[in-house]
Image 1 (tube, rainbow, N blue to C red):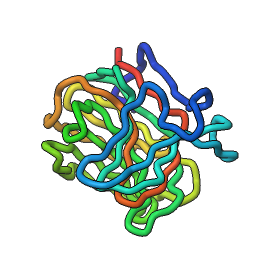
Image 2: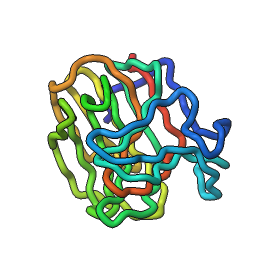
Image 3: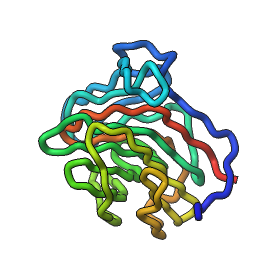
Image 4: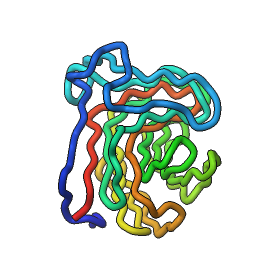
Length: 197
């Protein structure tokens, strides 16, 4: 059972009208820590909603790309992602209550480790809340969804709930977006979010 029965003002970004070869308009991209992430819209014949996806092909400690002008305290964030390659990591994640590149929540799935995990990042330092084993096949589209209300957080992968916790580290409204780790090359599509009722 989901934490939030419905939502209002839900929005979906499928990147299909975005300019190929550039970061999507209305998004801010960067990295927590060091590195040179490269976020850009690319064509992908396998995209859940064709023809385009948002892809991260650079590397960095924790690359992120967030939707500008969004501030949600309670609601949901969801994305379809495909882990394409990476020796160190093959991760795809979502961020919420994002204040800046050093302060936010993140949930991610990792195809090298076959797990789903939940963290909070504070002052640029990522702290683990919970890890759970979960099947995350590489080069396959998965759906990662997080529902958050007050201190309650639920993390779902491909429609199954894997993590449900109570955490109070970040309470303020913030932006939402997508996230990767290290040398992960990851494609994202059908990014959706909304405020809870």
